[in-house]
Image 1 (cartoon, rainbow, N blue to C red):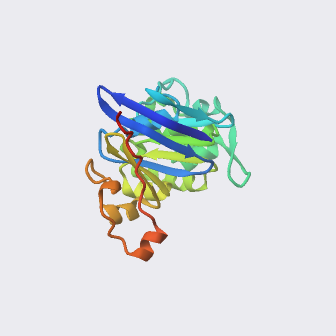
Image 2: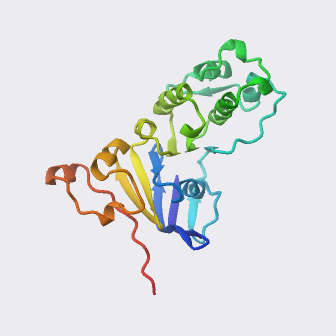
Image 3: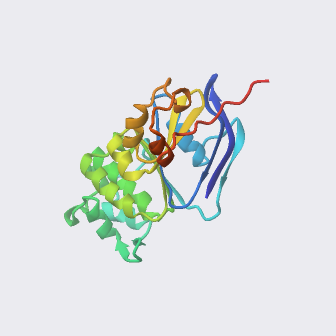
Length: 249
């Protein structure tokens, strides 16, 4: 679906990507995590084709229909009503079982009771507007959903509903987050950024990664650590592989 090859990217001498390669396939659940300042949101923008590389390519398949939940909400028309804002996108979507889900049904699922459907958007709280923006993206029926730090501005109730929705979502989900609980719910493959262009991969839950390697830091990329995992466990859950930096000429 999305292929990133030999990606290099740096800002003011700070390396974000160093010969990064990743093939993202249908229905994958990928979490992107790591210390602040390592370029997690930038990597998400690269995958989305929104960030120009210094070198390398990003190929996005012709069948990809992408929706991107960013930390900066696009302007929302304040004088529209809640249900009208979503109906402008679509009257309904089809769920994983082939059932038709109307705008009203989805609004109620995401904690907008029927009495709020006719409410003017300007009367909503900031959190409700963020939730409505998320719903607009879901109404676009994407097959690739990108989420940039959703736990920063969605409340716990909304996140719980979103977790349940994503478990049934038919498509690829790529999420940037530090939140262990949320990542455990929505991702079973991790890209861990350690800074300086070093990115390790882990197939499994973030909780399991933390037990094995500790919290990601700028110093503890698995490639720098000695394996302490028993032989049988190591075979069952191999250590992450970090992208190797290019050799300097």
